[in-house]
Length: 440
Image (cartoon, rainbow, N blue to C red; front, side, top):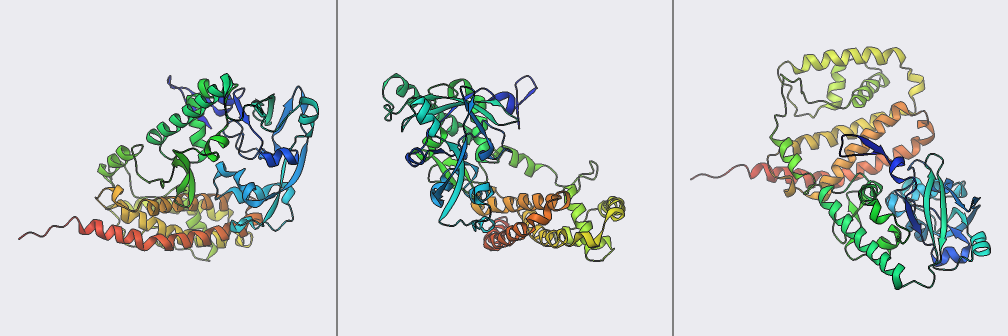
């Protein structure tokens, strides 16, 4: 939520994007239905934690009302694609208009028809002569409250981008494409599509945030020949059209080579093979959940089976683990752990498998470019998702409300792991075999 500045300072997203211009052009269906779906169209200019249907749009001091319209599920997903196609059903299901409907967002499916909350377009037609093809030119006025001011650009007669404004818009599309392609080489696939867009608009807002701007939606979904929404493991990212996003590229190759050359263990620095703090905590709580009190069980829950402790490492680990276990035991209540306990246990079981496979790959001396890239991406994503679940199930008070969704998610991750395990084990074996040469 912040960007680095050249002078060693930082600026927040709110500081960057408040007041900057972006545009929305409603579709024909929206125009005919008198509704504008906010969806992902305000990305990356608004706070990510504000649901899109709660964003407030104001014109000449008057706030647009809300209305609900039924959409074909495929068209609805298009309105949330930049959140990631894999997450779009969850955003749609979270719309209050779908409360009580069988949208099945937990399993990633939607019914044929869904309902979406949007902005009532009727006042724009009635009071501002809004026509099909016109666009809203917007700017965030209050970041925290999600208040967006806008004016109407009567663009209906310039659908083919002709004339002075059309020429500027075509130039805008060319620049956006160029800057996104550059970001692929320098930043790679960011943590999300939103982060990719935020970085590009932050660096080039003087050229992109202009009254004649187009929209990212029109650019990407309207036929960009070089950039598309492509697979990145089990997720999606902006990338070169028709190409899967690799795990290793120009953006991280040097750092990965540097990491591979560093000593993996150093007793002088105290840099032992370890885990994030939340994983240790969850493993200890899992021990108490199973009515055990042997810290050796915690080690067997976490460490790869082929891991060999280095001299002096295990006593230090046990000492720190004992201190943490005493702290957690004082506040642990087994009766209150009946929802989080099974989630924690399943998460740790899968985490050990994922972490053990990563440990094997980390021990390879070959180039990671030689590994199956999508499988490698999925493995890293599984690691990150499991870390999120392990943190969530311990700290979030709403775990009971979301436990079914979390368990379904873990089941899906187990299937994903089973799909990639043999492929990556084969790549590891091939890598190890390539280290040996037959000498006559």
